[in-house]
Image (cartoon, rainbow, N blue to C red; front, side):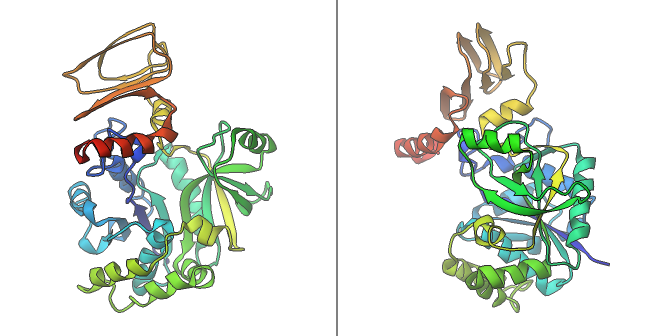
Length: 356
């Protein structure tokens, strides 16, 4: 019987959620939705009906090892893959793919971000099972696509061949984050979906794809076949990452490969990529404000307020603002100013490392 394996990618620093998300504890380790579980814990829970806990791997930066151990104590050290430096998503897929290949070359691998949120888990499982069944014993590289609800410029788009009878649809093109006018045309055409960054493929298919499209990365990680699941693995990986180029799995493999397919995700989804997207998922008052703080609001709408309960926030005549206090930083800006957050964070670090 074919085994399923899940790889949760958890190496990002969540800069667009600063100052709530910090380098020492980024958003995937935070209880963003107030459920009592962090985003990475919710992601782990989501896959327990897909495969046993022993087949779930987390790939993250070395500096987050303690956080992963604390939040996912069910995982063994062999299931926590530690990157010494960030090398984008191609390396983050290749490392676990070639590692799992040594244990089970016939397996199916699911790759998912650690910081996305899914609603309607039962439908998610149904859509994922469709993709898994298509991936078994095949060379198909499959991604889940989300039916767009608006012309979003912050997501990548996938165009697919329209075949109403087929649940697994052939991909035509990938498009990175488009301008608003182009995104609107995508929505109107009806044959585009959002790229959710969730991938499904057989171990055989993805390792062969690396050898074909990113041969240098394939050769690097193939050389570790005698080191995986041994005490020598981390030293090998530390050296391997110094040789790896930084490239995304989308650009390096998915946009070049021929056997690329898409299964429509019919569940509700958000990448929680910004305060604005989090605002969409939260309960709001009659003026469309999210208030996660002790606050007094006057003549204000479409705002997001977040702060410690012992601090009172008083705001008047604001429209579409984020007001948040986290530890030693108070931030007040337009809620949709996500493109400015890298600049905010960079400038804050110049004021002092403690603000990053």
